[in-house]
Length: 70
Image (cartoon, rainbow, N blue to C red; front, side, top):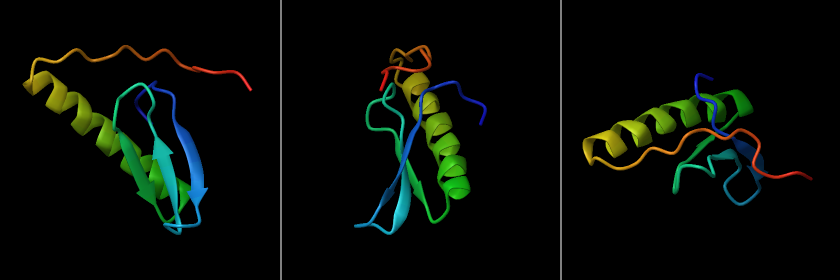
């Protein structure tokens, strides 16, 4: 992974896939059959999210790292 954004990965029984959410980038999510595939897809989606934000002259949030503590 090239990005430093927090990623939340979990298994979805409903989708039968691993889901990756990027909470700092609204609406940014990816999935995959394996954890590795889901993380790879997440990097692609992050790159696309940032590219689209640049095209639209929207603010790109700085990565904050860990957002919550368990």
